[in-house]
Amino acid sequence: MSRNHVSTTVNGDQVEFLCETGQTLLDALRDELRLTGTKEGCGTGDCGACSVMVDGRLVCACLMLAVEAEGKNIQTVEGMADGETLHPLQRKFIEHAALQCGICTPGILIAARALLERNPDPTEEEVRYWLAGNLCRCTGYHKIVDAVLDAAREMRGA
Amino acid sequence: MRYEAPKTLEQAIALLSGAAGQASLLAGGTDVLIQLRSGRIAPQLLVDVKAIPEMRTIVADAGGYRIGAAVTCMELIEDEAFAREWPGIVDGVKLIGSVQVKGRATMGGNLCNASPAADSVPALIAAGALVQIAGPLGRREAPVEDFVLGPGRTSLGNGELVASIQLPRRAPHSGDAYLRFTPRTEMDIAVVGAAVNLTLDGKGVCSSARVGLGAVAARALLVPAAADALIGTKVDAAALKRLAAAASAACRPIDDKRGTKEFRIKVAGVMARRAAAIAMQRARRQG
Image (tube, rainbow over all chains, first blue to last red; front, side, top):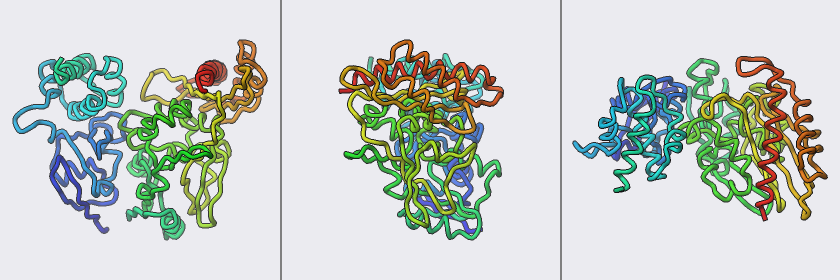
């Protein structure tokens, strides 16, 4: 079977990889590029653990083929911190203990950042609706929502 | 499996109709990738239509709106002018999965996947939308209510694809709305969906209406009897009651874990009545 050559941008870096047509972007990120921060939960777009940004859009990496990444700009959780300095959302997740097993956390961080870029001052209800596609099976949602609201406050300088 | 991303409709049609084995069309992929993964489909060729400009654009002109079949739900939701014109369609599109899913999923895919519970379809039927189909024999169009034949089945022939969805020009004082019943507010599948689109005359009398129902039959339904209950009235309580009765009478639902037949029949009337009330409010606001 012929493999597809893909060149794309991940977290600002130009990268190239080979993939089968049936491979998802999630497979390519984890197996070809060794960026394992993006997690596989359900593999069917229901849990949001594989949330990444593609050309500024929040999407599930399990619902996109790797070949479709050609020429795109992809952002994953690995690009969220600035060197050793955590993103405010990452810091607030730790402060609020908004994770336990951590499988859902990268996806929720990416989704929450996408929300705050669109809406720096969301209500609790808006946070909950926006994150409806991100499932957490251990911490529950209160601490996650608290962390997002607190990060939003800090990022607004309020 | 080969992957192609043609740049024109003609190339896409040639690929689909000329394929030696099974060929599948890829737009948002939120259904296709799951079918690939589960083995439900195993095509030799995937034709990605997202590089075709006509399928990726929202065009507003004097004739109405033309929505490319590969425009994502989020792109449509964010088009403020469209949302002012067709808020009921946006009601439906907003319910198609999570933000992540809507970032990829398309209204064209929601239509072609042909689920009886597809959230955008009842509102498209109520709107009087036409499916613009392109194929090896040229172009044709079909009303949305005739396009879906049953669960997973459409009237698309070999090599044909949905290029866009055409919405008619809006008359003044028009409004539409879609409501669905689900146990949860998000990330759920409609137990019943109802859409109402209506136009008022200068005296506030309903001069035209269309009603679409979802998840109450093998495919989404256009219900002329329910629309007739509104036309010629001021959409008062008596008219709404007749609308609800006509909507319930049109239902041919199944019993399943989401709801019983009796429940679906009853709730279809309730959803239609409430959607009509919202459509009325919106029509009154529209100059």
